Image 1 (cartoon, rainbow over the protein chains, first blue to last red):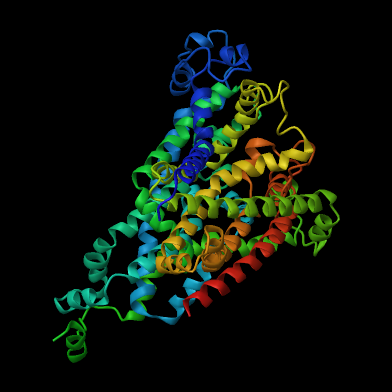
Image 2: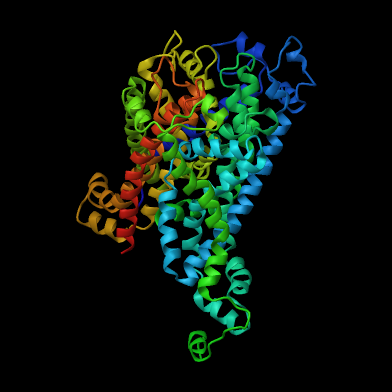
Length: 294
Length: 310
C-alpha cells in the first residue's frame, strides 16, 4: 500500500526513535570507555567529551602493568581488573565448550524425538518444556551445596556442566522442529544403502541440519557468554571469574570508575553483538522456532 | 519403487544394529545424565534444603537439621519477602505490558518495507539481545548516573531541566529505572515473534477490508489484532515467567536500593542464601515459592502450545 508524504515522514521519525532507543546504551558505553576519569569529572553537563583516549583499554588489557597518561595519578586498581585476562580466557573456554556440548547432546536427543517415535522420548520432550521455565536461582542454591561437597566450586568444569544442563532443554526445543523438516525418505534411502540408523543420523540428518545447528549454536553461545548467575555463585575467585562475574564484582566498587567499567563492558559485549549481527538470519529463525513449536 | 515401499518389502536389520529402543536409550544418555544432574536433582534437593536449617555452621559440620515448615513461615512473616513479591509483581506487570505494546508497534513499523529507515531498525533489533545483561545494566546505570549520566546531560543540553535528576535514587522511580533496561534487553525477542506472526497474515484480508472502506485503525483492530492474539498470549506467558526471575539488572543498577525499593524475589533468595548470615534454607524456600509461581505459567504455556498443535 502506498503512503502519503506525511505518513512516510512520521514513519521515518518513528524508526529513528526506535534506533535511538536501541543504540543509546551502545553510544554511552563507547563514550564512557574512551574518556579519562578526569574528563568525566571536568564537564558533567555537556554531551560531547572534551578529550578521547584509549588508555582505559591499555590499563585493562595489560592487567594494570601499563598506566596510560590519564592513570598516572591512580594509586589503586581493583585486584580483579589486574586479572582481566583470566576472565577473558574463562569466558571464551566456557562459552565454546558449552556450545559444543549442548549442540552434540541436543542433536542426539532431537534425532531420537523425531525419528524413533518412542513414547518415553515424547515424555522427555514435554518435561523439557517445563525445564525451560525453572528459574536459575532455584537450581543454583542446591547446585552450590552439591558442588561444594564435590569440590567443584571455583572450577571451570563446574560452570560448563551447569550451563550445559541449563541450556539443553531450550536447544532440544529449537532442534526438534528443525530435524522434523528433513524428509524421512532420505534416512530410509541411506539405510537401504547400508547405513545403520546412527550412521544415517551422522551422514544425512546432521549435515542437512547445518542451518538449524547454526541457529542453536549462536543462541547458546550468546546465552553462555552472557550468563551471570551460574558462574557468580559457583566461582568467586578472580582466576575463575567470567567477564559478567567480573563486571558484577566491580558494581559499587569506588575504585572502579565508569571509564574503566565501561571499557570492560565494551570488551564483554563486542563478541556477542558482532556474532549476532553476522548470524542474524539464523538467530531470528532459532528464536522463533524455540518459542512456537514445542 | 519408492524408498518406503522398498523398506517395507525388505526389513534391513544389520547384525550389529541396535533396536530402536536401545538406540534411543544410548543416544539420550548424555542428555539424561546432564538433566538429572543439573535440573532434576537440584529441584529435589532445593525442596529438601527448604525444609532444613542450612547456614554456615551446618555447612561446616555437613549436618542439616530438619525444621519442617519453619523456613516457609519465616519468609511469609518477613515483611521484606512480601515487599519483594510485591515489587516483582509491579515490575513484571509494568515491563511486560509496556514491552508487548512496544513490540506490536515496532513490528508493525518494520513491516512497512517501503520506508528505508525501517531496514536499519530491522538490522539493529537483535543488538540488545546480544549484550550481556549485567553489562547492559551497568551501562544503563552509567546513563542514569546522577553526576555523570547521559540522561541528565541530555536534559541539560536540550534545556529541559537545569537541575540533575536522581533517576535511581528515588524509591518511587527506582523500580521503573530497573524496568527500562530490562525492557530494552528483552524487547527484540518479542518484536521478532510479532513480526513473524505478521508475515503469516493473508494480505488479501487487508485488501478486501480496504475495498469495504475500512481505515487503517479499523484494519488494525478488526484484522491484525485478532489474528495476533495467539502470539500475544505466548509472549505474555513467556515474558511474564522470565520477568518474575529478574536478577542481573537489579544487581547492576540498584542492588535492591534505595532502601529496599527494588528488592525482587530472585534478589531476596540470592541475598538470603549468599550473603551473611548465609541462610541457605530460607533462600531455598523463597526460591521454591518463586518456582511454583513461575511453574503455573509454565503449565499455562504448555496447555496453549498443545492446543495450537492440535
